[in-house]
Length: 459
Ligand SMILES: Cc1cc2nc3c(=O)[nH]c(=O)nc-3n(C[C@H](O)[C@H](O)[C@H](O)COP(=O)(O)OP(=O)(O)OC[C@H]3O[C@@H](n4cnc5c(N)ncnc54)[C@H](O)[C@@H]3O)c2cc1C
Image: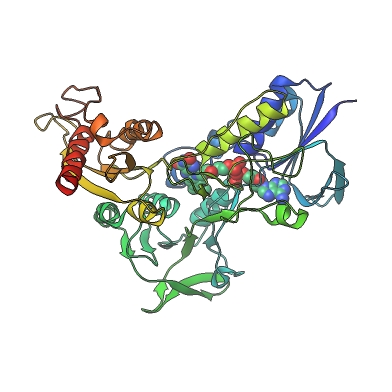
């Protein structure tokens, strides 16, 4: 008899795992049932801001593989609009509710892939029946916001609450649609994923686009009129609005796992080993935004909900479920984003992470340009490096600048992954031609500056 894999969650982690398992085991050997509570499988949530702005069409363009493709080409039993409501680890069964109203089903499993992703943080004041308040996590969320923006009366004012990268990308999308946008942030400024000196460059660029930034201002409530949101409430008074998008970050979606008794780690996400197995529960796997992973620089467990990790982790789980051997060995915190033409990249530890992890370090900022100064289109680029004292090992890097800034972080990520010192980095053989870099690449200039800073302190 074929064994059975049940997958909870039909997006990046879940479908990567299911596809890899299917590549290794045919339907006679492994039956695969996927439960997805939404309307879509294998979609790019990362593309939602660009769908909201109108830059890319959607939602079809954001879908890599439809449920039908998985059914016909991958021989999977994909059950859409089915929400798993309980996991019985003893009986090795899941219970799922058909959200189309056709009742409940119980299915047994040999292997269980838990890939429920994350849920947007929603403080108690944001729980409301008023229309016009949105979290942003799935294509269904994107579709709901699009519908609201297109419906009559058309919203003119928007408030984005929280300035993480999703808040920043959505603020950009809304301003591009012609709304007047206010971003309200409890911290001093948006983009706390980089240090505040680098975040200020992003805030400046956002103001330049016409986005109003209200920093150090926690939102404490919502006001509504006629069933629609009409303002967000703050200590400095209400900010009138026709639509609110929550960008307060996400937390791992672990409710089902917790209820079933699966172990959570210190970050509140599910604990897994390097093969994506849930410790103490043979045949139970988890991957993606619902799990925690090792930060390779700090050595601490972290919850880093990014698509790049979800896909890799899902693939690892699927290879292992399929009988192969694969591991996911942790992350270093690399991420990129943009606000219109301003690009932002980061990798490794920020100053506050390095301090919390007990490192002694220096940090330097180097101002340069993306191309040779004389070449048309040369624009400023700021590179920040954080290096351990006295070893000089790179601990973290951040870049803010115009074209070619964000993906330059990749060379720094490779250096960091391989434990390079800033001294080693000054020797890096990076490409140079006037359209792509000054003769001293901004990364090399920053590395030299870090070497000088270390020498000044430790000579
Ligand atoms: C607006 C936005 C922009 C982003 N941009 C980037 C980016 O640029 N780069 C990057 O690396 N990452 C980005 N991300 C993050 C990335 O999308 C996520 O990390 C990735 O989708 C996580 O994949 P996942 O499979 O773990 O979870 P999800 O994609 O959240 O999928 C989980 C699925 O499980 C389903 N589900 C949950 N509970 C149940 C249940 N009980 N029963 C059945 N189904 C259930 C959900 O409906 C969902 O479809 C972005 C995310 C958003 C929202």
